[in-house]
Amino acid sequence: MNSVQNKDDLTWDELIHLLLEKFESDSVNVEEIKDILASYKSSPADWKKFAKFDKYKYTRNLVHEGNGKFNLMILCWPEGQQSSIHDHANSHCFLKVLDGTLSEILYESPGNLSDKPIHVDIVESGRQDCKKNQVTYINDKIGLHRMGNPSHSDSSVTLHLYSPPFQSCGVFDERTGNKMTCPMTFWSKFGEKSCSKRTKANPKST
Image (cartoon, rainbow, N blue to C red):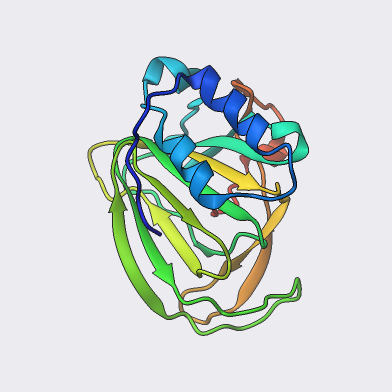
């Protein structure tokens, strides 16, 4: 996952409008979307209403449904929290750090994955720390990864875009390599925390 820095500043509303425009077609220009995300300079006043934290785990908070073409969400990472090793269900995954630092451990792609439980070899292939306003990208051809907040004193907040949206993904046991399919749930939607018990389950994926 290569990082890019912001160039021309977009407002939050301009960012969402431009993303909606670019995803009107069925094709995805990865570099163009990375540049658009990099062009927004993070300001907590824009996104703090979506940033719902839980003290004991990271949360996934839906910001926009992208007219069915993508999900835009904010993930909130308390100190020391991390995801499990996971795939992205054959979708594009863009990530921008809004606050703090997020670490990534990348693992070799296991190749074509089915929905059935399988075993894969978990082989680390790289690491990086992503700082505020940096943008990264991954898909299943690039590999699996684990994301986490490396700080034990500061929280972090990240913006994620998944296209197409997906309802479940593969999570992998680091020791055995066994795959489990986990549903994707939201801690909040559009700035409002859900009262449904279903949203309290954390699928441990990003």
